[in-house]
View (cartoon, rainbow, N blue to C red):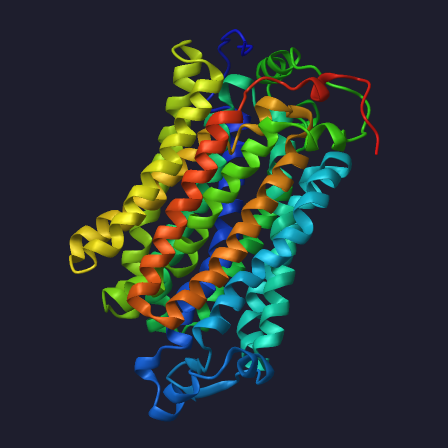
Length: 478
């Protein structure tokens, strides 16, 4: 049976833990804007409608040739609006390169954050990512190869920042507030996506595409100052926390079995099907989400035939729904638990089902309504919105099954998700380069199939109980 902590009232809206969630929200917002900046800027950087005939012809180069020739600027269009001869395949590699870096650091950073402190790991990752964002326009001028390297290193920095967050919540979030607090922090990604997609096109047209990177890289540097000032690894050590809130957090977490040993039970984890259910959920979720985040401006621009400003604004609308569903989903999940209306495992599977099934149905419908402007926009809004209901499902599930190793497991989970993102980004670039209409149809059908497989596996093997290896002091060593 799922163990439910007894409800106990503690400060909430004005609490320090909510303040930490807001700061983490802003940090996630900064990182996602830095990650998505290229997706909106690339419309101006390789916009075929603004290129002369010779430049258009050069975009049909084979993939290998595109990588060998760094692809310097072909034409200057106003204020820094260089146009590059990047084929769809080359763009797919550039987009997915940040995921390569994320994978390299997710697992080790999650483990190291538990040892050396998440505050330093996350803050350093955010700072490096922000500085590299400022450098991105120069990297593009110097060639595709350097841009891929910069994006990969930026991915490594963001991997450090994403993963360690669960180390903080393992010590700051009472069990009955986990969905709420993690959804507030995680919604920064949706909010950031909305902001960059909404104003990115406006910035590109008014100031030039380079300023997209300058502005959001600078915002990230400001968020670093806020991070190192407000965030602490442990509520006991925070100088500004009230005695009441500290006692509430400590007492609510005291029931959780922990071990003073730092060994990681790898063998037990590998044999644990509930963990593999979480991993499968992440793989499915990230597959479609990466396509939406990366290719949404391109899809709207190519299918609906709108300019860069309209493309950016329309691309931002789905993330309003994502932001709303993330926060409301967390509130609803904690409400169902606090009122004992549903068991914990039922809540996790319910929100996982909604977050994987609903966007799959919308994705399958998209190719059949491409001729309808309004219907296409509605479906594109619903995909990220309903997908983010997973934030109260398997995404937070590692805090239920193994709170002590939550950060380490989040790193592995995101690793599975990023592998899916790399495959889906590269596959999408290849499919749409062959045949745009048929390619997009195959992209959405394949995404729906991946989602369904992940959902079935999670429904079969997902659990919400603390696993024996996560509370046993006698840990398995490698």
